[in-house]
Amino acid sequence: MKITQVEVTKKSKEGSRIRGFARVYIDDCFVVNDIRIIEGDEKLFIAMPSRKVESEDGEVKYKDICHPLNQETRDMFEDAIIAKYNEAE
Image (cartoon, rainbow, N blue to C red; front, side, top):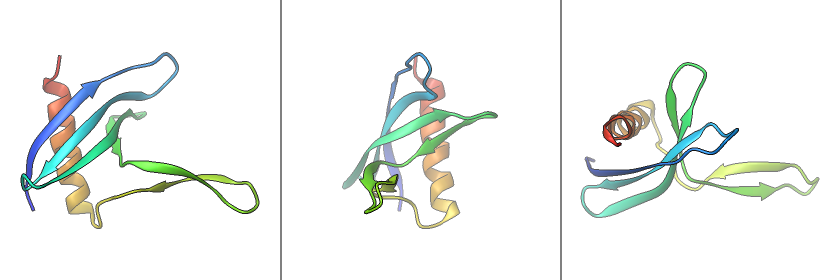
């Protein structure tokens, strides 16, 4: 698997740690949208697309729509996205 393209849109909102969103193309045949770029306490990190779900007892959680299955793949996504974020104006 190879990341063939990364697009980043920088956005920031007062009081939010979200710094932007990324779109990642894999092998020029699959795309993952709405990856959030978040300002952590020590560095930027990514959060994969997710949706809000409510349990039967009313507890609200977020469930990933898609996500890497291992740390090597997560690092590959994060490195490519953060590098593109740092290049963007």
